Image 1 (tube, rainbow, N blue to C red):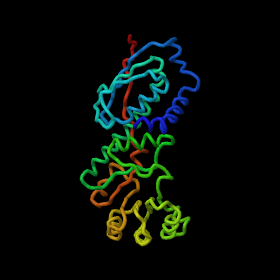
Image 2 (cartoon, one colour):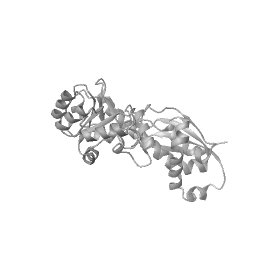
Image 3 (cartoon, rainbow, N blue to C red):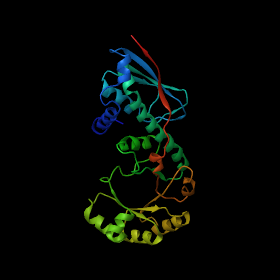
Image 4 (cartoon, rainbow, N blue to C red):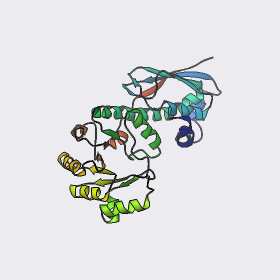
Amino acid sequence: MNKITMTLQADHLILEALKEDISSEDVSTNAVMKEAVPGEVDLICKQDGVIAGLDVFLRVFELLDAGVTAEFCCADGDEVKAGQLMGKVRGDIRVLLSGERVALNYLQRMSGIATYTRSVARLLKGSGTKLLDTRKTTPNMRIFEKYAVRVGGGYNHRYNLSDGVLLKDNHIGAAGGVARAVQMAREYAPFVRKIEVEVENLDMVREAVEAGADIIMLDNMSTDEMRQAIDIIDGRAQTECSGNVTKENIARLTELGVDYISSGALTHSASILDISMKNLHAVE
C-alpha cells in the first residue's frame, strides 16, 4: 500500500480506530510511564502464514508519533513461520504500548486474509481462472481487506457501488427482467463501464446473452447447469461463478473454464494470523 493511498484513503480510518481504543487516554500506560523513554519491541509471528499490512501496522504508530521507526525482516506477500522474528519497532515506549493493539489488529486481520486467499488461489493454479473477492467486507475495513486479497494472490472485484455495474436479482426484479435491466444500464452508465448480470437459471443465461451483457455471473447453480450455461454463452460474454465458494468446495469449479470465480469467504471467513509484539525494553 503506497504512501499516497495511505494518506488519502487509510489514515482517517486508522485514526478512527485509534480514537475508538483511546477515547481520552491510555490509563494503564500513563500509570507506569510518566515520561518519554526510547524503547524497542520485537514483532513475532506465532503461526505459519502470509504477511500483509506491514505498512499499515507501522502507520498506526506513526500517526501517534512520527518518530517511530521499524526494521522489518519480511515484506508483504512473504510466507512466514511460527516463531519467526518479523522485525523490530523503535520509539517512545508509551506510543509502542498505546498503539500495540490497533496495529496488531490490522496486521493480524490482513495477514489472515492473505493466508486464506493464497491457499484458495493455489487450488486454481494452471486453470486460467482468476479468484475474485466481493463486497462482503468488514465496514470501514474494505481498503485493507481488498489489499490483503491481492497480496494473497487474488484479484479485486469492483471496489464499491460506484466502481461498476452489477445487476443482481433485486435489480432485475426492479427493472422488470434481465433484458430491460441491461438496456437501462446501457442507457445510464458511462460507455466505459462493463455490464455484469447475475443469473440463476438457464433461461436467464439466454436472456443475458441476447441482451448483450459483458459478464455473466452464474450464481448458486449446479455444476451441470454451469456447464450448460457456458455452452450457451459460447464466448459471447465473460463468465463468473459465485455462491458460497470456499476452499473446501472450489474443486468442483476448477475445470469449468470460467474466467472468474468470486468468493466472499476470502474476506468474511478468514481467520486472523496470530502475531504478537514481545520483549519490549528501553534503549539508549
